[in-house]
Image (cartoon, rainbow, N blue to C red):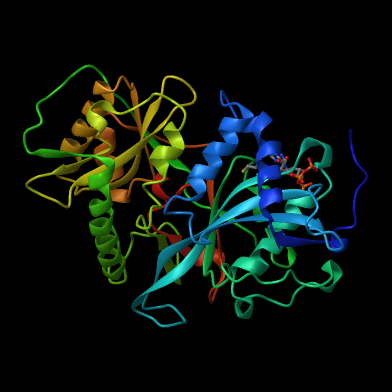
Length: 388
Ligand SMILES: CC(C)(COP(=O)(O)OP(=O)(O)OC[C@H]1O[C@@H](n2cnc3c(N)ncnc32)[C@H](O)[C@@H]1OP(=O)(O)O)[C@@H](O)C(=O)NCCC(=O)NCCS
């Protein structure tokens, strides 16, 4: 049944109550539950919510609900945010704090959902517009539009975000148009680029490489976070490595705090799938700065091995790809995919049989709240590890 439209100013954004959180799961299940029963779907979400990347208030469910009845189960729509430790680097030409790298906070946005009976009334668009007001520092936002009524209340576990990212499955425009003041200035598209290899039949030996279990990957991501920071410092002095023309800031999420680790249980929950040997990563023994971690995409069948983090030089990359293909082959996976290989590695990928193309789904989009505009912000490591 289609419902009458409610005036948007009479609604606001609220942190969901436990009952509303369960209602969001009930609403999403018929569309996204796949082979899971409702009970299994709810349990899966509950189990994911206490993992490192989400626990202690890092994950928040938001609802757009009537101001006069914020706890209603008949709320308009919902979404989730994940608070993430991140880094920002300001290049020499930046107007603020040139030549520096800082820790900062960002947000990943996910699970944007309006039930079919409430769609097409502007609810989700309004929710996304209001979301800036609870995730960013208000000092960094313009004046709250009067036509929307009072601004949403700030929430203790949220706020202070310098940027926010999401992966759109409804094209670019919906999120781009949802800015903090209304039309425009919302999340902008960045690099929806994939590279894919067919795995083939060739196998090899394991000499010179160390396979990594989920437990061992935790240590790898600490090492990875250090390298990412060092890379940002180096990028401040090297030119020509950027996707945007005149970057005023370079930003990245970090793989630590369970962010990259989450990609594995998320993908495999409820299935009997496991990588052969329980290996979800590989590292060169002679060069510890050559490594990769991965997860899988179970749908559509057959699964794809999706690289979550990768570090290699132009010289070591072919060997690393050979090992990753080997891991895929031994697990019965015919295809390997990676998002946004850095410039130098794209050419090497082609020589190793990788095909690079622009994706039409999971479009990465970013909005920046610091000085300057989103247009001039470079998203470094716009890869699968921080997908949400
Ligand atoms: C996308 C969604 C959240 C929009 O909710 P809503 O409350 O109807 O959103 P609004 O009324 O603010 O805006 C509707 C606009 O969304 C856009 N939109 C919705 N679905 C879309 C799709 N599949 N592809 C492209 N644009 C889409 C359209 O521009 C639409 O405008 P229209 O009504 O004039 O056609 C809702 O359709 C939904 O829950 N879909 C299923 C889950 C989903 O795809 N979530 C987004 C994942 S990134």
